[in-house]
Image (cartoon, rainbow, N blue to C red; front, side):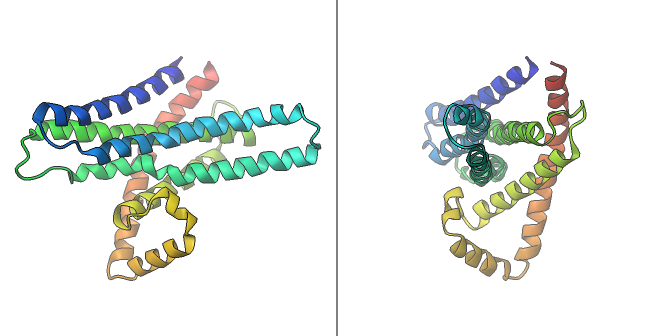
Length: 241
C-alpha cells in the first residue's frame, strides 16, 4: 500500500508541476514557456520505461514458454532484452535529474510581471517532480535487479544492487551535464563518434574538466542522499508487505 501511495504521489507531483506552468501563462498573461512542459514529459519517460521494461522482463519468459523456442535461445533472448532495455532506460534516465537545472530561472526576465514567489514555487515543484521521477524509476529497476541477482535476499538491500544504483546515478549526472552544457539529447547517442568528439573538444577548454567533475559529483551526491534512504525504507516496506 505504501508503494502504491508513493507512486500516486509522484504522478500528482508531475501533474501539479504542469498545472503551475500553465497557470503562470493564464493568470499573468505571459507567454507559455513550453520547454518546461516538454521537460516534465521527458522526465516522466524513465518512469514509464522502467515499468514497461520490468513488466516485459518478467512477462517474456512466460511468453517464450508457450512457444517451441529452445531453452538456450529463450535464455539468450531474455538477456538481449534485459541488456537492450537497460541501455535504453539509462539513456533517458538523465531527463529526470535534468530538471534540477531549471533552478537557474532561465525562463524569467527582469521585467517579468510574474511574482518571484510564484516562480520559486513553480520551479521548485518542477525540480522536485524530476527528482521524484528519478527516484521512482531507479527504484523500480533496482528492485528488478535484486529479484534477478538475489531473489532470496533478506530485509537488507543487497550491496551489489547499491553499487548498480550508484553507477546509474553517476551516469545520470553525466547525462545532465551533457544536456545542459553541450546540449545533447538522449537520442544523440545514435552518433557516439560525434558525441565523443564534441565532448573531448569541450573538456580540453581551460577549466572545463574540473567544472564537469564538480558538476557530476555534486549532482550525484545530491541524488544519492535523497535516493538511498527513500529506497531503503521503500524496500523494507515492500519486503514486509
